Image (tube, rainbow, N blue to C red; front, side):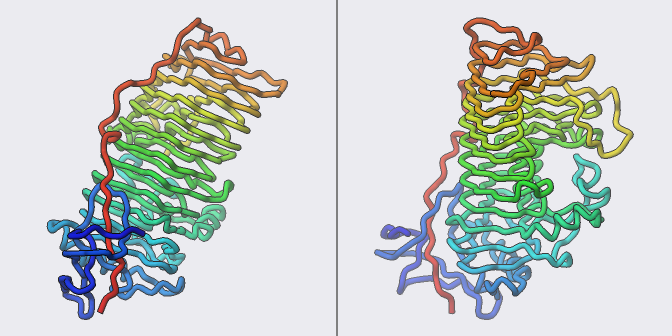
Amino acid sequence: MKTCPKLSNSCVVGVIFTVLLLGLQGVRVVECRVANGLDCFEYPAISCRKHSAVLTDFGGVGDGKTSNTKAFQYAISNLSHYASDGGALLVVPPGKWLTGSFNLTSHFTLFLQKEATILGSQDESEWPTLPVLPSYGRGRDAPDGRFSSLIFGTNLTDVVITGYNGTIDGQGSYWWDKFHKGELKLTRPYMIEIMFSDHIQISNLTLIDSPSWFVHPIYSSDIIIQGLTILAPVDSPNTDGINPDSCSNTRIEDCYIVSGDDCVAIKSGWDESGIKFGMPSQHIIIRRLECVSPDSAMIALGSEMSGGIRDVRAEELTALNTQSAVRIKTAVGRGAYVRDIFVKGMNLNTMKYVFWMTGSYGSHPNTDFDPKALPNITGINYRDVIADNVTYSARLEGIANDPFTGICISNVTIHSGKKKPQWNCTDIEGVTSNVYPKPCELLPLKEKIECPYPDDKLPIESVQLKTCSFKSVSFF
């Protein structure tokens, strides 16, 4: 909590203010004009907002039992009128706010205060259905449509979801049970999904127990995801942490993830539907990520990569009790490519694999995939890795007559203690330097080379967040 500066346009004065009616009797937004010595809330964001409101003013009840779906929908619908006048911020105050799916709007901030928790409803009637994603062609859990995400938006610009470490709880156990019992007729909802949008920020929140994937930006660009704590039981199904999907210019940083699946998975469509849609994931930076995922990867590239994945940079990575570090997953029928991947600075402890590439992942949407659609995997670079308590150093399996090429691994020390073959390599080509234990023959040692890592910065890395502020006001 900070003191607002004098003459701030984003704080509320005790005496002088403007009341803006929204057309709902009894609901008002207080727009600040002047402030002097008032306590304010400050937060970093890509955009500050001229107008603000509180969920309770739209009928919200934070008792953990009352549905707030209509309150969220009505609040956002009303605040959308300010998109062309400086945008609007909706404050979720302390309490437990049960809700089904709701849609965001452009030039909008959803702000969760400390001790505010959004609870995902377990009433399926509060989750609208959506058609399957065009780059997938079918649902992940079932062939037909899918449930809308808890927080959803499409064709938006300038959207911020943030807070003072407020919580979004998907209450996923209801959906996990249905998945395990084979009772799903539609694909489970994700926690946050933003489609066909740009200038997105998701930050400074705790996300727990999503029904499926947690954060899923898709067909979008100019994305910042930072300061998230993401928690799910390590045996929960498909609870990927952050999955940029056919996205570009994306920055993921300072996140801590415990997951039942991949902590981060970069995707771009599934077999023939992804090939036809043809939108790659590209120009992505991941840094200062911490991951725990005993059955999956810290970072996965694929397996749905049929629009292509290129120019991914990852650095300052930590994994504990995780199956693998940065894993490539693909198969015959995927087509497209994974290329120009750069990883440096991994600190790993208690891993099954350090390096893992899979050319036979399978998991096709149907049996009619094109056997001639071979993925091109090339330009994969790892350097500066320390790993302790490892079962296998590497499992690198390309595709017969379609080898994975241009693999470079340098400055790596792996401590295993296991009396097992440490490197298992087939259908790959590349080089290594200063790597222990000794790599496989398909990755011959070269003296004094350092695998490349780009010196230039992606445009999203230059985006500086503004210091925004608002007053937590009372309403008439």
